[in-house]
Image (cartoon, rainbow, N blue to C red; front, side):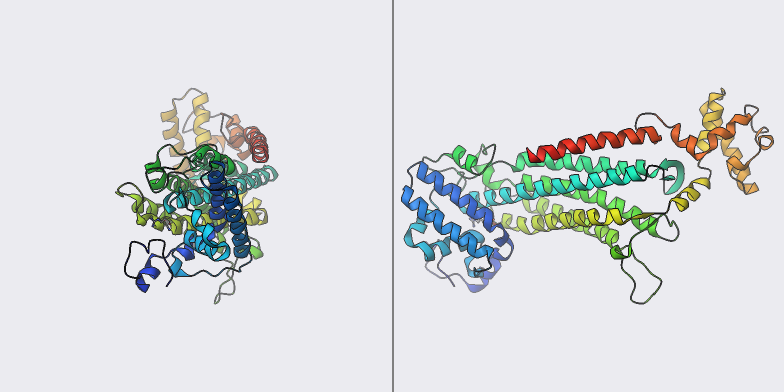
Amino acid sequence: MSEKPWDGRFSEKTNRFVEIFTSSINIDKRLYSYDIEGSIAHCKMLAKQSIITEEDASSLIHGLGKIKRDIDRGKFLFDDSLEDIHMHIESRLLQDIGKVAQKLHTARSRNDQIALDVRMYLRYETLYILKNLVDFRELIVDFAKTHIDVVLPGYTHLQRAQPILLSHQLMAYYEMFSRDCDRFRDALKRINIMPLGSAALAGTTYPIDREYTAELLDFPQISANSIDSVSDRDFIIEFLAAASLCMVHFSRISEELVLWSSSEFGFIELSDSFSTGSSIMPQKKNPDIPELVRGKTGRVFGDLIALLSIMKSLPLAYNRDMQEDKGPLFDAVDTLKACITIYIKMLPELRINKEAMFEAVSKGFLNATDMADYLVTKGMPFRLAHICVGKIVNSAINENKELHEMTLKELRPFSSLFKEDVFDILTTNRMINRRESFGGTATKNVKAAIKQAEVDIKKENENFIA
Ligand code: ARG
């Protein structure tokens, strides 16, 4: 049991079970470096405003620096009677530098302090995630570029629909992850706001300079309302929503990899170093990585729902419920980062079975739409062409043939519009390359999309450096 900052008001010691129950140190200790950086900026501001002396500020800053080095080196004892990271650091400061430590918390409350720490943490992690997502998008583009000649069936309802380029499908994921980057970038604008100086909830009577603290901590903006500053966790929820959507995209690509690596599809093979075996069935090679990514998606959704539920109906301003925000936030950050990293490592290891993909395109009447389009170009209204080709497909099924295996003689009874040239447009190559409407799968479109993506990625990477 330790001394508490609120001991003056209390005549009884805190119950040991209460200490354990209210403690968050095991979770929030990972905020220590932000907590210390924030405290150092706060000290500098207090000194600049003559709220404390330069001399006091310099011993506080010196003491805080030493605590940071001790925690970095694992030479710091955490103890749940000290509740959270803020109290740990302050109490250690008192031991190390004596009474002057008691001046650190002037014009500050743990309520604005924790808001600051989490914002600094999340700003760092969001930028890290963004950088990694850009790297991953770059890998997708490289992969699409080197596999530009690979054709596979595009699916709707998981039924073979029309032939597409594998690169076109991959670039669809590129688009999804690009929007994820946009969402994280947008969330960052609202994460990157400095709340310190709001104190407990109403601001402070000291002549503080919040703009100066913000400048020291590299925040472009300070929060406008002290009550909102200590009670807002929207910025976390926005991050978790963006993370959840990003995980949706990872889970969809994962699902395709799981399906494609099955012997039923046989479209891809995951390298041995990125698969696992079965403890009982010697023949098995399991796609555990995409499966786990798919599974971890549920976890991140849970983190989002947890935060929404914690915040729902809370009266203003700070409530202790909000201490429960960090577990889900840290979990989502760790999970998303792990999923991006494993995909960055796994994607280049993916082997494509070009022949199996092509084989799948040649069966299942994937050229039926093109045959109908042919009749349209010869003057038949599309709806009638659809019915006509439907009948042809029906008869081809009975004959156990594909459309391109039928003869002109067999086609003519269905429509006299059929000529020998119908067979030219039924080939996979023509089917793909005739789809040159903007955003379509024609090779020249996909190549242009790849080129554009390369330009965009280069620009995004330059912005990180700037
Ligand atoms: N550990 C608290 C949290 O994570 C810090 C703020 C505590 N404030 C208070 N008045 N008890 O939210």
